[in-house]
Length: 292
Ligand SMILES: Cc1cc2nc3c(=O)[nH]c(=O)nc-3n(C[C@H](O)[C@H](O)[C@H](O)COP(=O)(O)OP(=O)(O)OC[C@H]3O[C@@H](n4cnc5c(N)ncnc54)[C@H](O)[C@@H]3O)c2cc1C
Image 1 (spheres, rainbow, N blue to C red):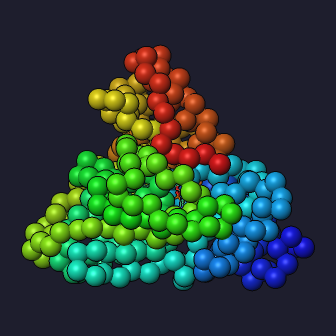
Image 2 (image 1 turned 135 degrees about the vertical axis):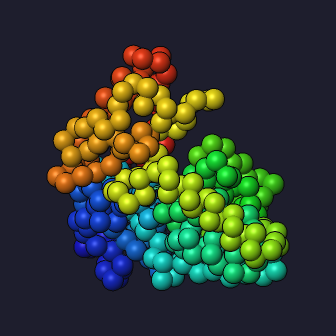
């Protein structure tokens, strides 16, 4: 690995990505790096800058479908060992990009801070969640983001402040490639009220979504004023299958991967859903899932 000489401890070749995603599907990354510090990350980026290698960033892989053939270029996952920190100062919570959302929510709750409960049960990490403004009917992460520390592909770090950040439905205006850390401005509340809210969010999620299956959450965005799940259900597609991939019977906007499933099965099922929903409702479903 001449290209990454000196970085052999954190860069691997032909790393299988499937086990790093919640779908557990897909092939290897040509190169895979797991830096533990900002210096290691910028060092790798300097080497990549000398090449044409495409760069992808992986969080907990809970919104990504990797192609069976794998991906060309380098996939970079910030190691939770160096990017999984959490600290609380009064009503400000600072979290590393690779901290799991459950730890973030519980860490804030332990300090009697409210605002992050809508994220309970979402299996992502802070960086991916901020990038896509993860959330649901109880609220989104963007509502409480105060500041984000980012790094661009030249290895430069800088901050994006609240006033200059915009969050929409599963989108943000953060264009720098790496989110390194996020700060959240929360409010104090009664411990029991926070616990009750968390429980309500969790029960609602558990009752309506197939949390125990291999999936990537909702596959499609809800079209304005409509529910993608309801449109798929009305098209008679609950339980529809391609190979080992099936539309969940519990929530039609989830595709679950069963025995023998491939990423190709999921992609074909996605196309089948889009065609059938379009035929029935004249609505084109846009992907929430990111396909690599
Ligand atoms: C069972 C289940 C339930 C789910 N429920 C919900 C839900 O209720 N609401 C919801 O919004 N989502 C939900 N999801 C989807 C997913 O968990 C979220 O989108 C989550 O925020 C993705 O985070 P991640 O760390 O897994 O990111 P990944 O899937 O790894 O990446 C997602 C995107 O973020 C980028 N990214 C990741 N880390 C970084 C970083 N450090 N810096 C910059 N970019 C980065 C990636 O390049 C990619 O573009 C669910 C998924 C599952 C499997």
